[in-house]
Length: 272
Image: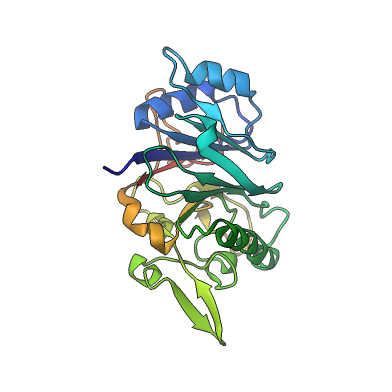
């Protein structure tokens, strides 16, 4: 039987969201919790996550201070392979998994410091780091999750030399394409489905500025799935979460309540 793993990612904007996150972890039955911009101590997290009973959450060892990871299983099953200031790449294999996968959790530079051009040129660097680990570990099943600080349609996300995230899983299942005699592997980016007002929210981050080009809603928080992992990805599980049992994360006008955080969390499931 495949092992069902529920993931939650949230950029908590340095806010003291222990109770909100704990409520979401219980509500969504989360197995792997990934946080960006966390300033709460590991001890406080473990004390909160293990109430009222011990759920055996551990923080995987990491020197990437932009990302914090807690799991419902022992940290020995999540091994750091490579990391930097902006990302951590870890090998995940629990006793019930037939083979390992790679988890890349990231928080890329903000658009307040990097414009579209800078992000486009920087994305291939992060992708190259991941490719090197995939070759080193001989693993092609990879999931990338985090705050990319780019929308799915921006060049750094869709360029072949960058993350190469396509909106159609059928295209991604072709695995790669050739441009000028060079091969570029795909990622499937299901977050394309969450842009626009067909759902409760039109993105994961809201920003309004008095400039000619303003998207208002942005989908910065994303998950990318490698072609080999698409059969394990439960499309119906992917969701932008707008509330928990404590409160809504949205204001009455439908924008994000930044008293809680300036980002909305995302959750998804892999059947491994």
